[in-house]
Length: 75
Image (cartoon, rainbow, N blue to C red):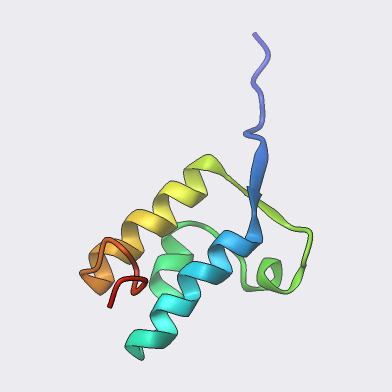
């Protein structure tokens, strides 16, 4: 049986957009980044990508932590 590595296909720009919501709320995103297993070094790589699982973890975690499903875009 061959096990496959998840494909990292979501651009890091989506993570940066979520981090903007944390900045708007004056909150620290460290916990959600840890939960999503996104290394801080990855944030400095413009062409970096994350997996679908990581995107799910960071977006869902951010919505819960910030109590805002739109992550600040409609306020």
